[in-house]
Image 1 (cartoon, rainbow, N blue to C red):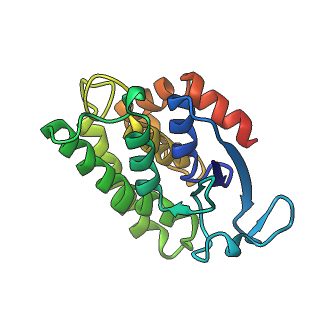
Image 2: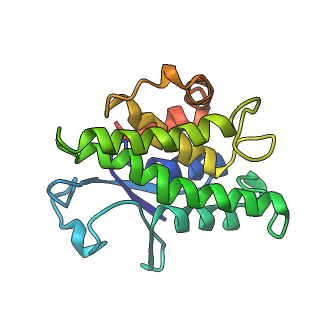
Length: 197
């Protein structure tokens, strides 16, 4: 199995989860600007959408989109306990957060990488609104859903980590800041970040 990723991109979430699960896999680094792999080959031949992550199986079949890949890892590695049991209300809450992080927080903070000075105030207000939602949800909690780290926590960590690059001070969001500080100490996170460098 091979995970196509870009340094610091949302592909770090499945990278962390594969390590949490003890999966056997390799990584292939992608330059998202040039759309080239580190060996110079064309990434668009792997994923015509032009972005990461992509999980390639030994059969040659590929799966893209971070939410689909996270769900695949959860389903294929149940002993890693990266999501609540299917069919439980807690699992639907987990899916609810997966949807929110994917459609609102990811896009909200991500937009600031591509927004000019004129558009920044509106984009920043939108991102701050979504961060505030997470801040409230983490009040008195270590993890978004349940009592242990899950795949959505990996995804949330990666997206909140972008705040330093888009000049959002997480110190104003103490629960989010504490969450990031907690997750960055996990062995899987340290390993994934080291491998991506």
